[in-house]
Image (cartoon, rainbow, N blue to C red):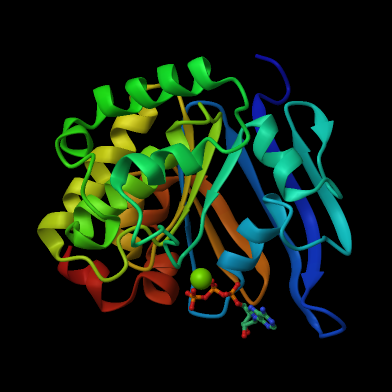
Length: 246
Ligand SMILES: Nc1ncnc2c1ncn2[C@@H]1O[C@H](COP(=O)(O)OP(=O)(O)OP(=O)(O)O)[C@@H](O)[C@H]1O
Ligand SMILES: [Mg+2]
């Protein structure tokens, strides 16, 4: 076995906003190709901040971000996107008054070859027939689950290697949440590496291969998701009462 098979290696990251204090202080994650990773941790732990650092929206003050064997720390967000790392932020950011098709097209704004973009749009509509049906409809008229599908479909236009989803199930009814995880499985089946931040740790970890526990800006634990779910100490500290009921 090679020493490291990591597609993305984030190590000892220190980062904060503006001149403010460090929010991340020793955060990291080892991301394996083709696997689904779930980051859990309390509110304010720095989960979203970590994804912002990886996507280039927030510079790291120290530490390493290595993707596919090359450091990507300091690259602009669009450069990181071009390399194949797509970030879907917590606030979904669809264009509400634009149609489903137009939203998908916006997802491919860095693709300048029109024929290529059309092929990619077709590929996404193939994967999400509902989006084809609703192609002409305004994004804001879709249900919450459909909007989430559109958000994910939009990232697929770029044929990403890694998709990072910040709380994709936030505010969705349980039935729709299970649809969101169906889509995440579809991403995985396409060979895409997925990183999700999930407030409901039990649901998130149950749908992931690997887990990462972040607290106080630091990575406390990383390992197989089922191991995290079964670890009595992690259950007590981070999985709350829900774990007992699961
Ligand atoms: N733009 C910002 N400017 C200043 N401080 C920020 C900014 N965004 C986040 N923070 C602070 O960074 C800390 C970590 O926030 P972050 O959003 O990364 O946490 P989180 O783990 O994603 O929490 P949640 O589960 O609530 O989404 C918080 O104390 C927050 O107030
Ligand atoms: Mg967050």
